[in-house]
Image (tube, rainbow, N blue to C red; front, top):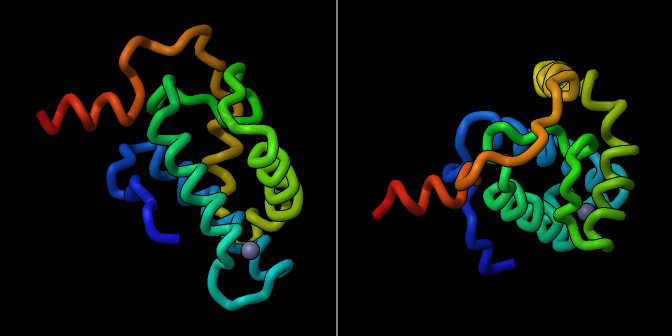
Length: 131
Ligand SMILES: [Zn+2]
């Protein structure tokens, strides 16, 4: 796992929180299923993919939780992995990471924006800021 192009620190606000939530769920899943002590290569790859998707999400910080999102941006195999990981780790989050879990539950109550605001993605914002 070498060329992870996006670093968690580029994510802004709620996107960073969402990444931490996904990361926590992947860690729980990997620990219980792959048991390597650290993240296995497949799970690290999944996380890198999730990070890129968060960075590019056209909703940016207005992003609804993935479950409610009308845009299905994950490729089929990643989507399937995500479903398996969330199903396993979701219920355990309240115990291991109550604050992240509750934030995610609250985020899930927000209305889904009809359409993304133009140029709202994290990627667009950080590119236009660094020029
Ligand atoms: Zn794993």
